[in-house]
Image (cartoon, rainbow, N blue to C red; front, side, top):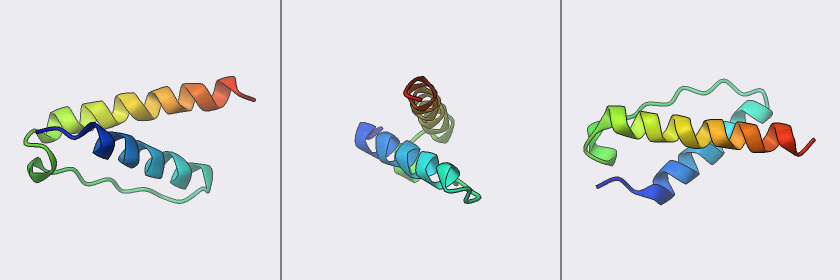
Length: 58
């Protein structure tokens, strides 16, 4: 089962790392939620939304 909190936390970690100019390698597997492609898609959506929020606040 896909955990929305895990998606949120992952996107936040990636977002902060990129802000700090840290290279990020994100590995997603089926154990985290049963469907790695779906998890990757959800993390990407959340991250993209965060990027939009960040660019709109400056």
